[in-house]
Length: 279
Image (cartoon, rainbow, N blue to C red):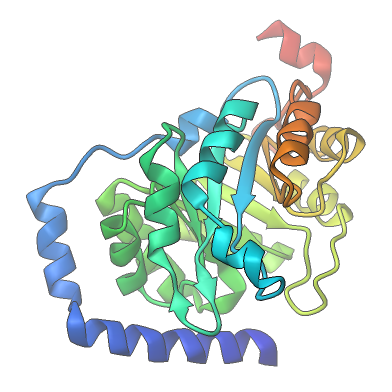
């Protein structure tokens, strides 16, 4: 783990310790046993012949202040759903204040798409908390935790009937995700340190993932050409950040729709379009 990820992990553990004083894990477990509304099936939402689109919602940066204050995830999620996204990803971490679960709750409330919580998960407590906040799926950054912790978080998600999406950056992390039992793997094209995106990461790693596992190519996808590139590499879905302008965002989602996604066979080999048509 590099220094940047280690600092993030340390920060999240301090946040978790404070949260557990007010809401212990055993109370969350008890709530889960008492039942809750059914969760939306993100696996079904991302399956199909076309590249499915996961539109990401992030709180705007501090400047300009007007944009940050006017940000309403309820409205944004409705707009993205109406434009044709298959699912919504909500990034809930803010280094200044910690996790912002209300962003997820608001985004999910007024539209029917499954919602993925994108945060820095370092403990199974967060998975239970995500469930309590209404998440349909959680994005688990594999490089942030050891294999035992990853496996515990994946098992906790399965118990809660929410999807665990393992976020990977290299082949070793793919192996860890498969060993943990993840049924959805997201390949991060974006370097966690530099912030630079490289679609060749998806092209390299997708072929190492069996066809029974759904693959999401995450970040660095802004044009139809880039969407076609990751689909040709074997991605079933693409997670991308639409423009901050809502009208441009809707146009971007519409422009990326309809890209054929042939997927991979059981060995990880990318299928041809002819094979897709035979199904």
